[in-house]
Length: 171
Image (tube, rainbow, N blue to C red; front, side):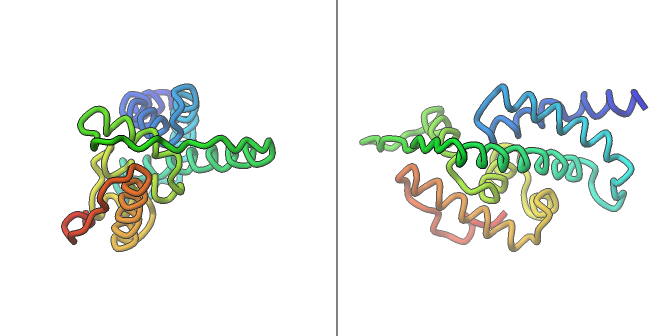
């Protein structure tokens, strides 16, 4: 059904591109990932469970496409022995605003995939609580744990203070 495909593209193209860009860090890969996710979502419409939110189901489809791509890239890097470091130099004064965002985006690819997914969906796609858990396909508690660990890992990579209070870590 061409109308269904057009609807999916109009509704999710930008979201999938942004998700692919933040997960891969590469605009060309993000375009390919968005296209692959859109096509996969369209081809998988028959498996959509109407008890779930369509948007969260679509995010799950896109995340699976991105996970597969990133696993494949990791294997290629291991086989080619490409061990380039992505460590960022520590600034003398804490960054803020756009500078901090740029450092976070540069550090994201260094996080384990599960933590990166939780962080990106929460902070860049406004998924919180049950919505985040559903998009990740895990319990709300597990989503909170992943989000806390992602924040802590990013803070360590950026040499910032880790979240300390309970309100900082729950979604």
